[in-house]
Image 1 (tube, rainbow, N blue to C red):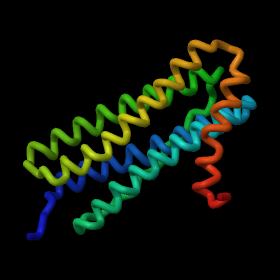
Image 2: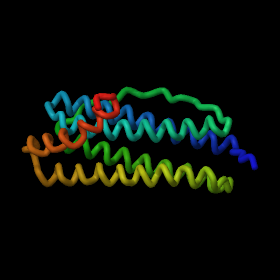
Image 3: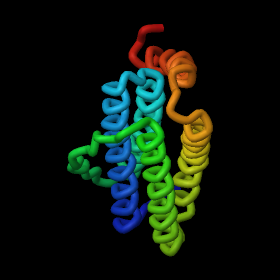
Image 4: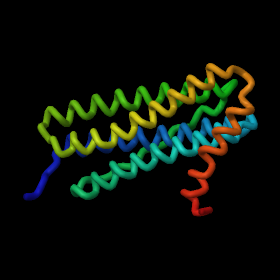
Length: 173
């Protein structure tokens, strides 16, 4: 049985893909700002988070193509890279994630109105993973708030935890 997805759902999936790619790019910009502050651990954390958003965007793109849809790649806006401290930077990621999940929820409702449950289920799977990422970001925000301005030890912890993940993705392991 062939599954056909409406043009409206393909359009909604393209919008979701756009937002995932744009958020990935913005998080990468935040990472650069953190690196320039000397916070290599926070930078490694943001590299991981950026990669995850890019990965979800790529999954949505592949899904669109598998159903014969047309992928329209987004124009990526200039990223804001001026953050006075690590807490402001990671809080921005948390805020972006919350907005992204709300956006995806809205688009999922639009697709559900078309009764395209296969697409709704697929987006639900991605959202489950994204909620785990959101919780991870929230934990970093809370820990950063708790520690205060002396982040050296926590930055080292983040570096030791997230840098191996980055190295693995680029083939160092």
